[in-house]
Amino acid sequence: MADGEAEGRTRAISRKAAAMNASVKFAGGMLVVGAILFVPAGSMEWANGWLWLGTMAALMLAALVALVVKDPEALMRRLEAREPERGQRLLMTLSIPYFLGLFALPGFDWRFGWSRMPFALSLAADAFVVGGYGLFVWVMLANRWAARTVKLMAGQTLIDTGPYAVVRHPMYSGGAVLYIASAFVLGSWWAVLLSLGVPVILGFRAAAEERTLVSGLPGYADYMRKVRWRLVPGIW
Image (cartoon, one colour):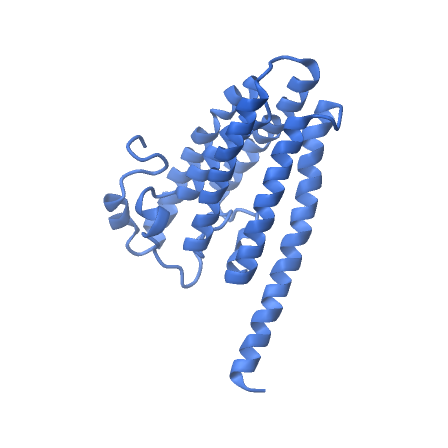
């Protein structure tokens, strides 16, 4: 078998494995998130819940297909969930009840009528969910080293173009927009208030991540001086 043919076969196998792995996790994740949303709501007739879940399902499927086609290895790295660093593991473990509450609270709110938000506002906020996730996908396409976990990988290089030319942690910027907008889409003022803690959590994570990058990624200290802002241009 020629080298080119062997390489093509390897890439096809890698792409297939990445697609299957991501598809299983996507389906399982949708079921779990759906339960977190609709069990507290006590009904499947909650329009806000379906609006958010449908939007996220479409966005995640589009991102999955894009990464399977462009860079299946990056997709596989993105699916890794265990943090290698103790401090990051502790932060994410302590954050689990917060994020569970963030998505369970709107269902309870709708069920018991604690607050009411105009549905038109939820529809408008859905555009920000799309925008936040779009930034998230842009980061993954621009930086093949971007992952859910904080660790340096063999061959990793500094990325300072695209969204990284504006802020040092654009994935977290997109995540903050996504989570806060999601609270609006889910129609709960109490969840909106709770969601304001997301940038704080992501800020702690970004600051800790930078200590790893400065010590192990050549050029990162100079990059920090070049790009001043971590998450929000002109603010922080």
